[in-house]
Image (tube, rainbow, N blue to C red):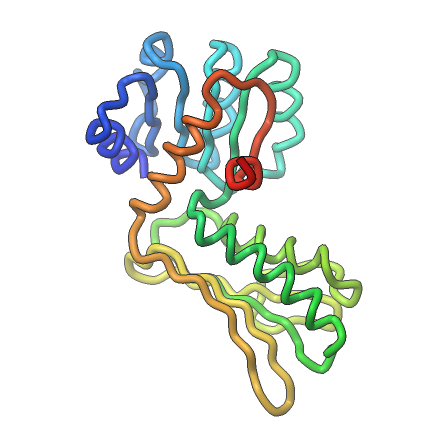
Amino acid sequence: MGRMIHSLLEREGIDSAVALGREQTTGWKDELDKCDVAIEFTRPDQAVENLKTCFECGIPVVCGTTGWYEQLPDVQASCTSQNGALFYASNFSIGVHLFIQLNSWYARFMQAHPEYAISMEEIHHIHKKDSPSGTGISVAQAILAERNDYTSWKEAEAGREGILPIHSIREGETIGTHSVFYRSEYDEIQLTHKAYSREGFAAGAIAAARFLHGKRGIFTMNDLIQS
């Protein structure tokens, strides 16, 4: 993603942003003095330190790394205390966020049909570190917010009553496929989003960087879409 974002920035003639990819572990801090916004797509074990460095340098940062959200309260506090700017998302695809909204509405609609058990499946490339994916968790949280008969999600192929199971698959170079199943004794309803190109994520991250420029605070894709 870092390389693809960098390529798109060059193609569009944007030289006021720096893209941090997972291959960039050193040297990138020197580039912060030359940019107006940073776009961070590294690894879960690097992201928090990178974000705090951006806050300290007064550089707004867009973060697409996932797998670090258990430290989100600490990062939010750091951003706020230093009057920084953070835009974070588990997925920068507009289609994915429409998919999340659709699942929110459909979970509410299907509340009247509890005979349909809900489950999820998410498929990504073998290099992805976090499991389930951040996007899969976001979809699950959108569903849970609308249902009183499901209390939490769990990474598993089969769930217990009140648990939304997420089956995570890592195969080949799959970009990202997320499916939600409503299964009854007699039939099944399936909602699926499948990504065909990573370029859509890169374009969304650049759109987020444009949105974040000149702002202070903490933002998500909902803020971008609503704008």
